[in-house]
Amino acid sequence: MTTATEPMRLRVETWDPAYGASTEEPAELGRSSAQVTLDVEVDESRWRPVDPDPSADRTEAAVLFVDGVRRIDAMAWIPGPDSDPDTVSLALCASYAAGAVRCQPAGARLLTAEVRRGLFSISERATDLPTTAGSYRRVRVAAHGDPGQDLNLAVQRELATVEAAVAESAALESGGGDDVLVVDGPLRGRAHLPRALGFIKTHRSEYLPPAQHRIVGALEPGQRTPVFALGTSWRRCSWYLKLPGRPGAPWAGVVRVECSAELPVAEVVELANRSQPMLARYASSEYKDARAPQNLYPIAGLERELRRRLGDRALLYRAIRRAAISM
View: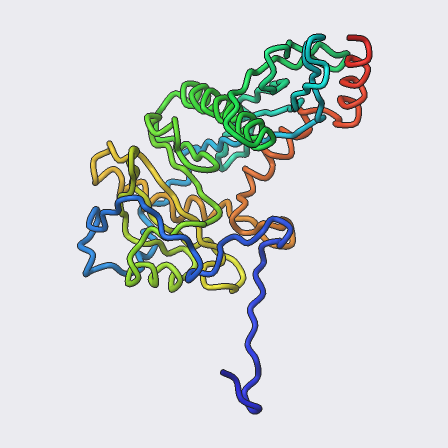
């Protein structure tokens, strides 16, 4: 509680509020039901912030970043059969894309990008929708409750499928070596790829016990927590890392990184050590990115390029309307 002689202290988060918060207040994080093992790297009694290891900085190695974007181009309704003309089903016309960019000291280049379009509906009468601006492939969706939510989840699943395919392609094209693959988001479906890291920018669940949880808020830029394991029907090795940036909320600039739990512990720790200088090197600045520092520069650039490849939404919307009128 402040007194009349105590000035109020206020730290404003750099993350643009239009995107929500990078994390809820630690006390408000929902407790996860995942099983957590703390003694992967060190015993839980020895948990402390881990400083960057200068010998782990392999600037000559390439880093491959994979991300995807999605957009709803139009909402539509599909009428029922003539025998039931009052029945209509919601449909979404969506464009989605995934790509990979390869970054090295000499520069960055786009490895691959794949764009798809789909007409998502639970209606059995749904068909492919050809338009002058591209064809929307029919994607049948199972009804579970709320139609809008069912369709949006289906779009997200299709995007995840494309992202997984792009990650596979990028890993093959890289030719192995010492490259690291960074996936924007959880590793789901890609944990088998070599040296693959999941990069989670926002936090909604509390995985760690209180004593270890407090260590996350005490991290200095460049530091990470020790590695821990978590999972339910799946299992990952994970650690929290604080990216460089202006001071803000206790968890400002904190990301969670994960890798396959099938790797030997020594290899997991090596990846954790490599992630500290590697991810810090690509952290964004707030004057350039509203989601700094978590929205890494290569990921932000890849998102811009993928959105450009989705095409002009207004043009696609007009093409969908023309196609609907002619059906």
